[in-house]
Image (spheres, rainbow, N blue to C red):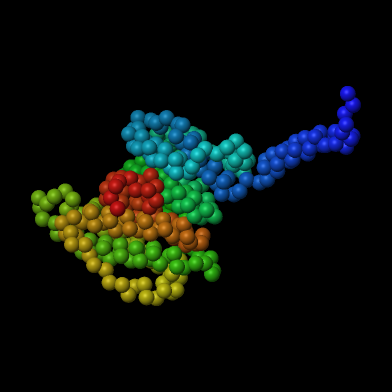
Length: 328
């Protein structure tokens, strides 16, 4: 039977099929040929490094119990970093970054605790640089909080006999902030630091006044801790980022602060609350500030987290972002 369609009409389905196939192939090529966004590479790199730490067993008998707590925090950080990156993003991260840390046993230290500490510090340093440069505010907060948690955990693994590191582990808050950056977000942190400094000044003044036989919570929160905390907070109020915030809003120090009524009875609780307020304010600024202000906020978060660890002995997996207890 003769096909009544013209040659052109008979060729049309074939031509459409070729066009559709070519379009699909072109779309696949464009999708795989386009560069992976920088923030996705950062997220993938952080995910891979965290997974590498989690895949390593306990680094040895000495810090085994502490390492289990660290592993639980790392698992929470991995969850906060989102789903596992796809193959294309993982490949891009590996191509642009050094290989993820292999874990505590590869840290090159003889002592198991030192090996775990070195591995945590190594990944914290990588997270810090990415937190200061990330465009996504939520990603910047998670990266910074994870870096602070790991640095604080590393100090605990080092033990009380280890010398304290000189200066901030993570970044130098004393550097000049970027000109023309936003100052409004920093006001929240400036006020939190000022309030906390006021509270720790009162705690230092009342240190040693707790009567014998008082409740355990009434004991001073660590020998010399209020004085050290006050000095740390004052230093953070004098860096260029803080001075820039105050210059933009000179009315900030005009507020009056009221000390908690249970200052004498529960100084540890008051100190913990003051440090937590700084954590929350620092996390707020990390999501909104420029690179210089983020560094100031990151160091404030680091010091507030170290303060809380000294008071309670506990470290949040994501300080300032997700608290590990139900209290507000």
